[in-house]
Length: 289
Ligand SMILES: Cc1cc2nc3c(=O)[nH]c(=O)nc-3n(C[C@H](O)[C@H](O)[C@H](O)COP(=O)(O)OP(=O)(O)OC[C@H]3O[C@@H](n4cnc5c(N)ncnc54)[C@H](O)[C@@H]3O)c2cc1C
Image 1 (cartoon, rainbow, N blue to C red):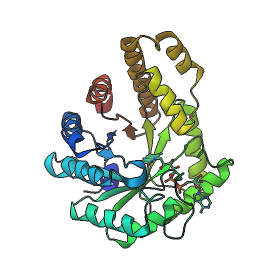
Image 2: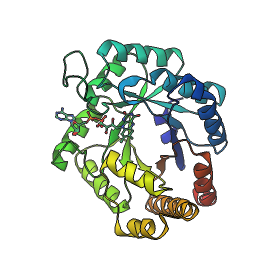
Image 3: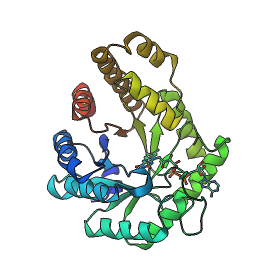
Image 4: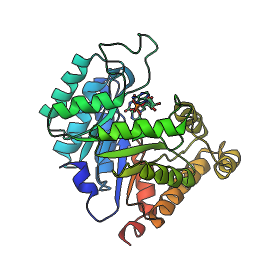
């Protein structure tokens, strides 16, 4: 089944994200986390793609396990900046062979160890979207950035390029993490004005430790609101308290989104089934209402 068809159902959809093991030996551990998450009945589980494509086989393997062994929709991420066009085509072919119908098409970060741009590799995600479209009937998702992408100084350019990407064949968008819902509402308003009409899944990252917050900020350049910083300041050095407060903060963001009419939410659960379960427990009646 395609994710876009699921998103068309008139109900609330909560999806999760995991990352693949770096080595074959790590497979069982990730598979076990995914097995527990599947019991929480997510709308789908997405599997990230390691920078440089080094873990591409494991992305496909976990995505295939989710779909074929657990019967849950899976979404395989795919990046293109560090791989040749031929390597990318091989990965698409492999995903097709594994029966994966949903791909999140990404450029990936600009590689520091090879020239970029380079005519042997795709330069932007929209080129990857065009390539995937040539390989048959995939449902294609792509990334978007409520606070603007870090490389782009002007938010309006970012939205113009996002429109180009969507028009090249994107079925739905997932946002970068954000911690202030008003930023998301403002972004939604601006992209709808720009004529982008596909479903947008807000990406919620539960921050359960001070070190995770630091990593998230480095990765995404996101703004942490004062309310979040106060939590970190007060509870950051008490692991149990920070975990509880981080789960409560993410739950609160999700409840606000749902109360404001959002129907589809993606949680960056990473490989933490306990965090996914705690949030789903907090929402058990809310998602039925
Ligand atoms: C939901 C989500 C999931 C992610 N998953 C992964 C993952 O699994 N693995 C991983 O390595 N990374 C992942 N990333 C990170 C992502 O790869 C980086 O943010 C990357 O820097 C940009 O990827 P993109 O697909 O958004 O690129 P693009 O859409 O190509 O945009 C990249 C930059 O180029 C600009 N741009 C786009 N088109 C044009 C154009 N025609 N002319 C000029 N400028 C243009 C954009 O405004 C933007 O600044 C994810 C990000 C998100 C939000």
